Length: 107
Image 1 (spheres, rainbow, N blue to C red):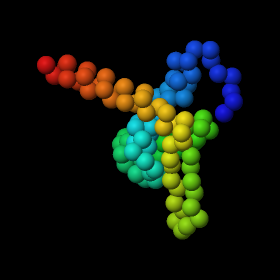
Image 2: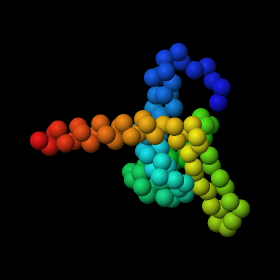
Image 3: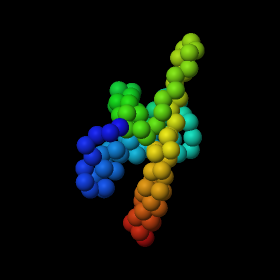
């Protein structure tokens, strides 16, 4: 993925994980390899088309790998790359902030 990247590092990060679906995919794959159906079920209210488009985009960006097994029916698994897993610090910070925000609202 050698694109013309923005000068701003925040913009680069947002370019890669710019919507909630990508962040939720990252969250779920931080736990390990998952199949398409597992991701769809754990993410919840996402269509197959939107999940497929986001997974393809993330694969093109180098955040995850897609492995297809020659079986009937075909089995496809998604795994974070080292680059994808390096976003753990970002997702962990989002979890911490979201938890603290919810706690403050509940008081």
